[in-house]
Image (cartoon, rainbow, N blue to C red):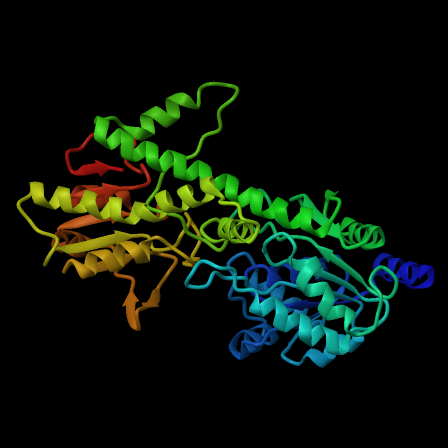
Length: 436
């Protein structure tokens, strides 16, 4: 055991450690680049042929990955993408970064993780260090992934090492990145935790170890549940303020002047992204199996999922005051990505708003400088150029995502009604503007 453990430490230290990253998406591709920047060689396993081909040509499809840097590391053979799991026979470290979506019943779909585990097991070798980084519910690593690996006959903590270390990627964040965001990790055994921490300490400024893989899994769920619940709170406050004829933005900004005991969250048209709308449901699902109802999570999910309908009601009321119906009205959505200044459309509330409006008979268009097109319900939508002619034809504009590089003054000057879900017109007084 000591020989294997110390040999692995030596490879980590002298950069001869060969790494495989499984899943080259929004998490796996930036992580691969970070490993290469720190002197390691990476083989990326990506089953999507288009993505695999793009990586091997040095083309980035992830906003936070610099295309020139990617091309350089590919040309230098420091990063190679493949779709064959047999390459795992020749690596020392494996990082699993595959999706864990929700099914139709909001139950976690960990089929990608289990499929990867089965394929790793076929090529599992003595001395390998394996990280699961995909978000999942407490118990996944220990109860589901470990038994698959143990079918190889190798012993955990002796022949191979298994660690859960959740990703903390925040797309578009200019301050916090992989290197300066503390890394949480917990291993199946103490040896697993120690070697996992040793590895990531070579790459990341701060590594925080917890007592188990279950604890590390719970940390990740808590982080995103915290945001989900607090966003739900301010979303409900927005609904309350609407009934009370109060400006919710004024209330929140004023409350935030308190220097202790308060943290500012803002309301919006609904939750989006790969984490916050999804992750809390993993915990809720897990607790149901233990005969416990996660009431805060369920309530927060209900409130947040109702916000697109609340926005549509605002649109309907505003059009009615102009003696127009939603049916037949031309409505322009400004921003379709889930977050300001990123082009990521995963779980964006825009699509719920669009669906509701079209079911009511509206003619819906959109402008987003970062999303040129998307497909929804098998229909393709393309971003419209933002100009005076377009705005004059619209009956209503809806600020869904507040990208920086949008001319909001032109929208205000040329549009009849504006539903502002992001408070971009905070400093404007206009009867045209209807705030969330």
